[in-house]
Image 1 (cartoon, rainbow, N blue to C red):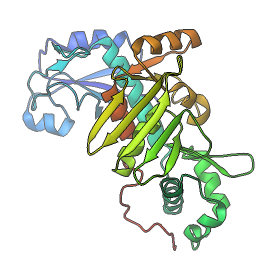
Image 2: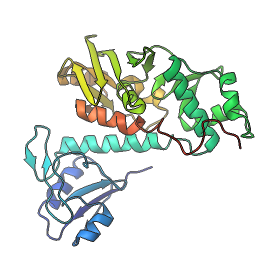
Image 3: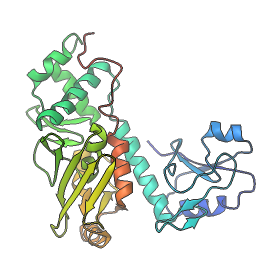
Image 4: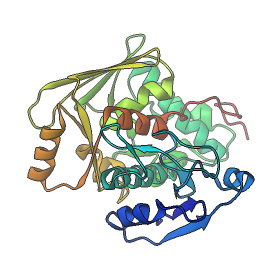
Length: 313
């Protein structure tokens, strides 16, 4: 599904032209503009200062800079914290990449109640035991749904909410891997799990609302990288560590098309060198951006549901 790009702006806004110029260096997708004159229209359209960029109807810079209220000039901050009238080319490229990944993963969320219940039960099994459940563990959840556990697992696999191995066993339930990966995560309470990629590892704390400690390694040098997330605070070691986000995200099942290419690096230089050597395209995410992406992708997966975990029809 193609992204939709819309710029909301006040009449005669001088910053629309540079926003368009920067976007045209990033994408060849059509870009629409919408003039906003009143506070009520700004609120209805989702404009927080002029210009505001909506990607698929979402303000992709809502958590950055200093947005203005309604039809007024918007202030952004570039990669170095300097005040600028519009995001930089690099910031726009990253925003579009993360928006595409978020929309892609959102489409994997099950809408059927039985599938939702099974999906949550699988995630909870990883959290509680560090391992995926077997079919017999899930049979009580699917009882009364009119569908077998095997059928529901196949549906979740087709959605790419989970991945099954050739024997029909659960191999992946994003963000978790049933087999060891480079990204080991300690969950508060002592359970150890493995994450499919660096962003998945960062999303586990947000999904659980509790403390985690990630232990990974620079994909180039093998230098240990640790991220401790607790009580709303995050500590990275080394302090210059970053995450590389592969541009292949969205081109197929996450487990096969991009998870191996979304890694921690000790600093931007090693990330760039690795990407160039592998001939990968993508974006280097700052710590804050990587954490925010993990939260957007996984933060609500185990949020309280409006229906019980066991489906009874």
